[in-house]
Structure formats: C-alpha cells, structure tokens
Image 1 (cartoon, rainbow, N blue to C red):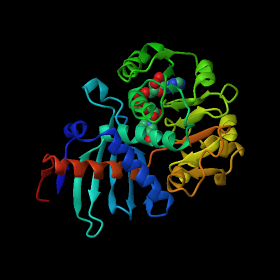
Image 2: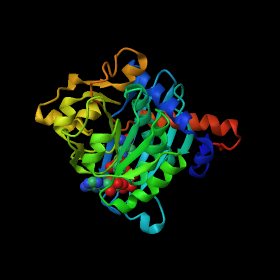
Image 3: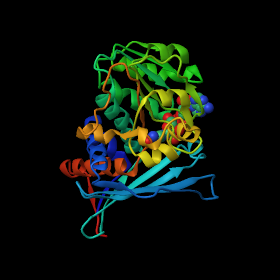
Image 4: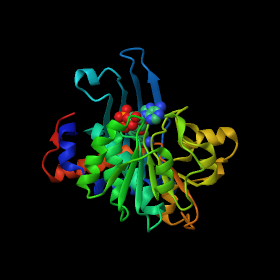
Length: 321
Ligand code: NAD
C-alpha cells in the first residue's frame, strides 16, 4: 500500500493535472460509467466537529475509494486547518487498500478545477472581466484556476469584509491582472465570469444586475440551507452541475427547486457538455450557471492522479498492509 502524505501534495499536483482529472471524471459520470455513493455527514458530538465521508467508483479508470474527514472549528487555534481530509483508494479488482493520500490541498485544487472546467466549457470565448465573490481559503485557488481559462484583462472582487481581499489582490498581481475591490452591484454589472465561493446562507448575487452572456460558477453552496445566488437568477440561467441529485438537495439549485421555479429536468450535467452530448452555452445571450456541489469522485480522481505522480517522482511511501 502506498502513502502520499499531505506535505508532498504541493510539490506533486499541478492545476493542469487537477483540471484534467476533474474534467475526465465529470465526463465518466455523465456517460453513466462513474457513480457517487450516498454521502455520510454527522455531527459527532465532540469538538463541535462535523465528520463524514464521500465515496464512489469510476468504471472507466477503476478509481474506487472514499474521502474521509470534515470540519473541526477549533483547529485554527491549534495551528491546524479546520477542514481535514484524507483520501483512501482501493483496488477495484480485490478491494485491497491501494493508497492513502493527504486530502486537504487536493480538496481546494479539485474544487477550483471544477469551476475551471465549467469556465472552459461554458464561458463566452471573449470573456474579459472575472468577478470573485468571497475571499476565504478557497478564493485564491479559484482565482488561479479560472484565470487561465480565458484571456481575462481584469479581476473585480467583493467580500463582506473588504480587508480580506488583500491576499486575493496579491494573487491577481502575480497573475498579471489588474484588481479592483468593488460593490456586489458593480461586480454583477461588469463581470463576464463570476465565481461565488462563500459560506453565505442568503443570496448575495441578485438577478437584476447580471448581464446576458455571463457565466456564473457557484462553488460555495454545498450544504442544505446555504445560498449565494438569487432564486430569480437561477431560474433565468441555463443550468449545469456536477451531479443533479446534489444540486437539487444541497447545491445552489435547492432553493429554486423548492420555490418551484426550476425543475430537476432543467439541470444538465457539465460532463455531458464535456462529452459533447449537451450543446452547453448555445448562445452568447444566455446566462450559464454551474452549480458545483463537490462530489467524492472528484477527490478520487485527483488522488489517483497524485499517486501516479508520487510513484513517478519516487516519493510514494510503500508499506506492507
Ligand atoms: P472560509 O471560511 O475560508 O471563507 C468563507 C468565505 O465566505 C469568506 O469570504 C467569508 O467572508 C464568506 N462568508 C461567510 N459567511 C458569509 C455571509 N453570511 N455573507 C457573505 N459572505 C460570507 O471558507 P472556504 O474554505 O473559502 O470555503 C468557502 C465555501 O466553499 C464554504 O462554504 C465551503 O463549505 C465551500 N466549499 C465547497 C466545495 C465544493 O466542492 N463545492 C468544496 C470546498 C468548500
């Protein structure tokens, strides 16, 4: 059995490899070759922790396994990341444990890769202004991954506490992109692509200001009750997701579904666009919205990719098990 520790991931995994792994597994899901199993998430009644696991199997790549972990709110005070993840891969032919992989950085990379895949396949080719809503841990990963998908000329961003935008501004500078801190109204009116990556429980981005032709990647809403986007905006958009079952239950579309303004059949899988079985954007006049809810198969795909890189680089730790 191989171990790829968290400390090795940054040296091994690239944004390109994460993009490729996520795009491929979305395609497998849409082709009916890959399946996510029911998610388990429980408050364990200790350390205020939320613990759970996401698992699945991709017949195309034989990636079988799970991501285990969750959220420990007291970790920051101990110098640790609040979100803790470990990915376990199993041999599809025998069930034997193949690898244990640190999952913290991989989670951020696979989430950003999902937004990037949506931009690659759904944003207008002439998109120039990238809007980022949120400036937490994931936001910089989103900016780095999405910025390379189009010839963006400017980044506009909003966060509920504006001082947190400084670190995002530094990333934009590194990428050679002018950066502006703006109001939400301004961001909506000026952006060609918008990424929302907050933990909000109320809509931040309203329908009125968003222009036709905009692509929105909603990446923050991954739990029942969370919401980043106005229900009217969801109803106005051509909708895509990683997995429809999650989109309608824990994703951004849950509210429009509950309000009856969107039907399950209105939501398409991004993987179908990758496979060419869905036409995707269709017209530059449409608003496209990707509801990125985060699926276990994404974690398995990037973990499998990093195990390969660890073997090639001679840093995978081999243990008898
Ligand atoms: P974080 O705690 O580092 O940052 C949270 C961000 O949300 C900050 O910008 C904060 O200002 C903003 N925010 C929180 N409450 C808000 C409110 N009420 N109104 C407006 N803004 C608010 O979190 P993070 O690691 O950057 O993750 C952001 C979100 O993405 C989380 O909700 C997380 O659960 C989600 N997430 C989704 C996926 C996925 O696959 N879709 C994967 C990982 C994380």
